[in-house]
Image 1 (spheres, rainbow, N blue to C red):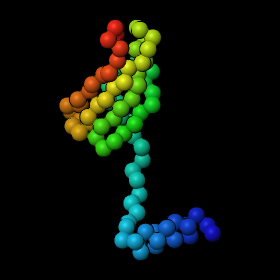
Image 2: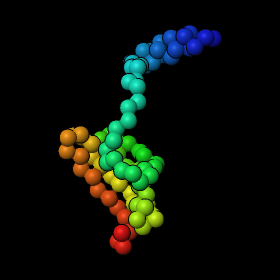
Image 3: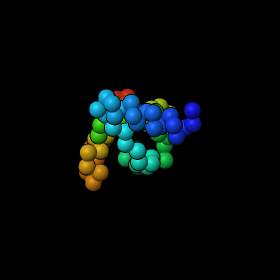
Image 4: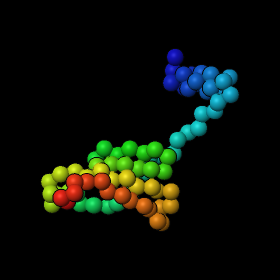
Length: 84
């Protein structure tokens, strides 16, 4: 079965279940909180983005949570060691 035939079969199966397939848009880089420090392990749930970021001054990581519902007014919270 070719890729095209497989895709058409998948669309037909989804349609029979009352579902539809939509082509996803290409990924975009979204700078939530630009930093020179390493930012790792991103995760997205709805409009909430989380990641860990190296705090080079202290040599450890903090966890960041951002609500990106309004990209003109991003709410960012950092969770880290009290000594940072």
